[in-house]
Length: 159
Image (cartoon, rainbow, N blue to C red):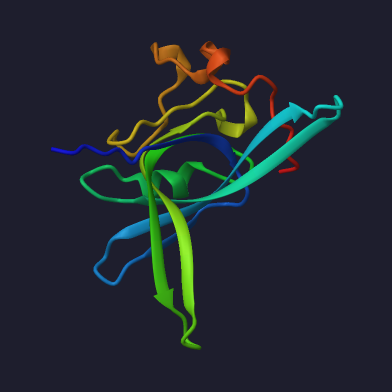
């Protein structure tokens, strides 16, 4: 029996507010644009940086309500953790051209930015009731408690 794994974990910042829409069958889906960056020094010692943009799709399914949580609590610039899988899709546009896209289908999402721009990290695990985010003072841990889990340098993105 062969086994395989399709798992993606991202920590990044939203490049714009979530785009939320309803499907024909009444489902809801949120699309996020998330930036991740890495920094390094070149062989000559010059500082280098590269930013990658990821399209993340969050569905309301199996009671998770991720699209609703994204719509209610996320905004441009917020820092989020996403756990999901990568998916490739192709389709034909109106002109008959084949189009391609790569998406991360989110299974879990945690908000790492505090509400109202505070430094306290609010968290809303997938499957939790849609409502007020859990706060750090209720005993939940945040990535701020484990700085080694984040990049060595804080990203200073312009949003």
